[in-house]
Image (cartoon, rainbow, N blue to C red):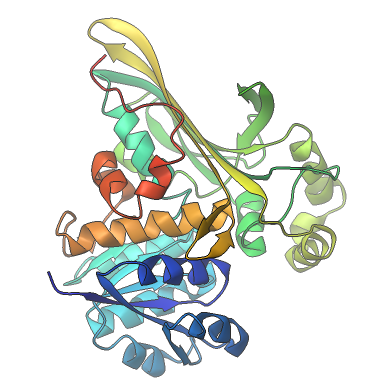
Length: 369
């Protein structure tokens, strides 16, 4: 099978991780583009081809995608429509990591008459959690509830928020402020962010969970009328939600996203000593018995290609590179819009990149019981 050429847009922390993973494989040639020379310089030292261009220049973007089998966007969500449009013009398959609903809708519109595949929301959440959730749902004769819970957390919390920055600040703010998708009584609805607070426990540690935007992906559509309740909530250490509500509501920072971003990036240190927890639970009828099943995955930072990468970098990059690999193998539709629930979990975990999630599995894949 011929090697694929991949163009990654974005030389930030996730873009660097994606490039590093693909570089370890014999199946890919990699090019990274960005306007930021500093980020590109870090990648260039690894032997990956880099090109500095203005990502908002449509012609330059399309030319940069020329000859590529696939484009992976690791750029900010507001650049998604422009990047996806250029990928379509260049005849390349398109993948991204966005959690932004409007950006996903723009990609879906581009996919309607496309001759290549368009697959947004391919990271951790949305992304892997949707694949795991769909697999869990398929294990029931009749699904009642599906609860998806995901958190990227510091291993050693030290501040009142019990939180460190581990990924995009813009994406984090989006999650805390935008309406959230859910299924209630079998119908797709929008629910308020930061609400529906609950407590879960794992390995003797208590966590809180609350609504955040974007993590459910397209599951609310595909399970509409097939389940009574489906929800996505973010995992944090207890007390985090109340402080965020104070900042957003009482201090009015919900109306000052620019100031909120500055506060977060000034006051919250970044860390590579993190943990990513995926906690999915479903209930329903199985062989005539009302049954509950869970899937839990816990990942920490690790060494890859001689460098330490954070858990959020590894899980996000593994999410998108695994589905790209499935496309290369011909295991996904070759054109049109693709949702995460169209990916088989076993196929995902069997790829060289999905195996990184397999290493973090806490519960075995037991579908026979």
